[in-house]
Figure: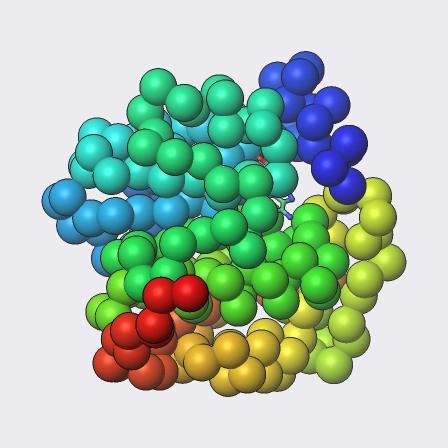
Length: 203
Ligand SMILES: C[S@@+](CC[C@H](N)C(=O)[O-])C[C@H]1O[C@@H](n2cnc3c(N)ncnc32)[C@H](O)[C@@H]1O
């Protein structure tokens, strides 16, 4: 999968990377955008959203599986992370993920949710776009290795992951039905369940 994306980034392949416009996707993502927020954008693509975030705050971070993607926006970010496991805890006011979940397998989605929730500040919010099968129970991992963007997760399995990893679903919003791909797009808004930051002893 990493190789798939590395090639697309090297070619600047817009068809696969997309260059979503922050303000266009915000009409349905409804991101809690605030000046000076610490924001993490998961999945850089062509980098447009990341650059637009920098117009709102100086504290922009990204997570992408490819170093090539991180390099593309290195002039506007504070830091880029290659794995969810390397994210700092209790840091981000907003974590956003758009057009990424349908490209990643269940293990990766689990990691994004687990370490994403851990990386939220106490009042922080994670907003993820996820494709759901129109027939709610039809999980479809058929293109999981192709990076083709057609992986779908049921609402129940995403909610289960959120609950397991200490999050709470604060809002679930239907956005659009794509009949030809047998998918509905939903926007999941997630917050931390624990509102107390427990200091851990230094090792
Ligand atoms: C289709 S683009 C989406 C770009 C952007 N978010 C947008 O909406 O235009 C997918 C991006 O996710 C990255 N990506 C793919 N798998 C990933 C993973 N497991 N973790 C983080 N990023 C990943 C790719 O390198 C690529 O930059």
